[in-house]
Every structure is written in structure tokens, then in C-alpha cells.
Figure 1 (cartoon, rainbow, N blue to C red):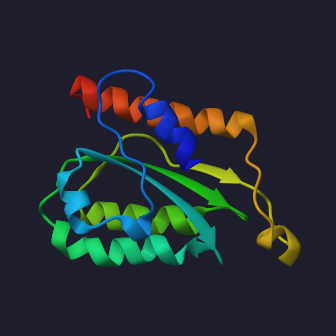
Figure 2 (figure 1 turned 90 degrees about the horizontal axis):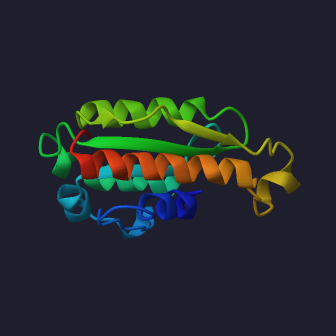
Length: 146
């Protein structure tokens, strides 16, 4: 999902786009970005540990320093993803970010231990939706409307 959004974001225009894992992202990365596309998996109906750690490490450094920047959110969920959306929206509200698009939740319906632990195969139609979110965010940033 993140790769699809990344590909969509860099498909057109001159926006500089980086794809990086939450564990590799620093507060300095957050401060220098013009916008954000968060891609988060759901674990036990909440934000996965690496994404929670990212927000924990970066939150106070970025507080009141990134106000008004735009973001979008992609969630890969095994159930409904609403817990992740609520958590990220609260964090982004604290950061005073502007939501550029409604959250996109891709539900894998993985409910058994085997399905939860198995690698996920995201349908092409869902990946196309991720590419669209990435492209729209990049286009809005490039046009100066986000």
C-alpha cells in the first residue's frame, strides 16, 4: 500500500517524494516535509507498534512547528481499522495538520491466527486507490492548495 501511494505521488509533477519506514523516520524528517502520507497497519484494533513509536518519538519535537501542513492516511486492517483512524486523527489534530483526503482503509478480513500471520496480498483495485491518494496529495502540494 505504501509503495503504491509512493508510486502515485511521484508519477506526475516535480514534488520530491520519499518513502521510508516508521522506524527510520526522525523528527528532522517530519520538520522538513511539506506534507505526510501515513500508511499504518492495524494490530489488535489499534495502531501498530512501529507507527506508535514513530509518533511517540516525533510528536513533541514537531508540536507547533508543522501546523497547517497536509496529511493523508492509509490503513491496512484485519477488522474495521477505525481504531487506527481515531488514533492517527487525534495525533494529527494535536499537530494541527490538515486532512487532505478521507482515510483509506483496506480491510484484509484476516481473522484467524493463520490469516493474521500470513503475508497479505492487497488487491490491485485497492492498490489503485492507494496510488490515487498519493497522486492527489502530491498534486495538491505541488499546486500549493494543500
